[in-house]
Length: 136
Length: 402
Image (cartoon, rainbow over all chains, first blue to last red; front, side, top):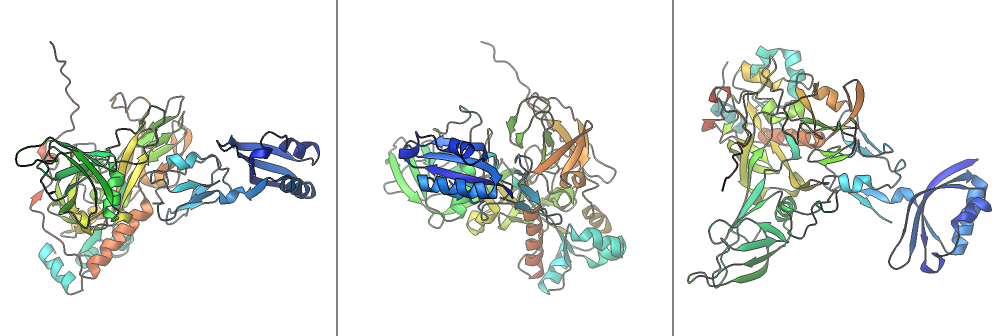
């Protein structure tokens, strides 16, 4: 069975200069698409990937990453909406490249579907009341 | 069948008033007919909740000991400069003010995360605000430097005073150029990549009273979650625009200046707002009750999103260059459907004003009236109408020669 998941990888400083992700392709037959990458001043590495392949390969790849010392989080938890701050104006609707925002038909309330979210961050700065939050 | 506001207030006091929102009145009149509905309905409530830049709060912080003349001095509230050109301890903070060290658009697009609108929100939320001031000393006001926390509960006065709110209709913004632009109507993607609008349409106060028959100076309103009043017509009030056969303006037209005691307002309805690449502002909640004094007044409140047309304007060129060009007109029904067609292209729409919150305001005001908590007022003077001859003028620039 094929799977495709978006995950957040955190590399402790000691792993930042080692080739790790490339082994997912070479040894585990997985494809990846880098959505975001950064190295913080404390030299912790952060990588947001869309990882796809066979379920069995995926599981082995994740086990390999974990054993190496990489911390893994599911991406869908990482962009959240502050429900107190959201005014349901809808400014985000045409900004989001993946269509993660929609409207309830009758009420026009804004729905955020973080399954569709790529964590690109465009909504963070374009949300007028700043209700969208990025957590890594 | 003409009613008076006094008669309506008597019914409100007895708990007998019939109050419906500007959404509900549409089907109500369809069902009962205008004549019967006008007899039955006493008040139609409206609402709008959108970014409104010409908003401000003035505060009187009380006197220090020894006294200090903040007037003519320099005052920062959470680093945001306040206007001090008033008496000793009166200050005014405008929604678009930003800290001196905000990078603005030096790294474009600037984020504008905190400004005057956020100060007003923090005030109304009861949050402490850091006040830093310097002033020149005088014999009667010797103190020259001040750093203190202030809180809305401790200061003498805090009054919301908005010189232009509740625009009667507004532009739909698009971008015909080939690069993304950042405007007060939000981020506009190139080549008609999106369209943004900002009106509650059939729920919006002045679109339900297009000729200002009932809304006037002294009209009591829902403002920022509390009670406020229409203080004057708003700046740029422009009754003389194109209108449909029903009298509904097809361009941005009338505006309201409103005020009220900030101390009884609520953070939910005064939200500090940031427009990427543009600046800071505040999103304001306003609801106006329309007393159904006649069939004519009622007829106007039955306006629907299909009847209200908004002009589509190019914010990459026509708007900044003060060109009057309107690309097209679209209805709020089309805008609220999520997609309009401009120059043959399907364009996704987004709103800057919150329709769900506008509905909530109209419903809240309805509840207040039904519960006898909110009586209507007779305006003391009307807003200028078409007969006033007021038009909206550009600045006549006259070069200053040496």
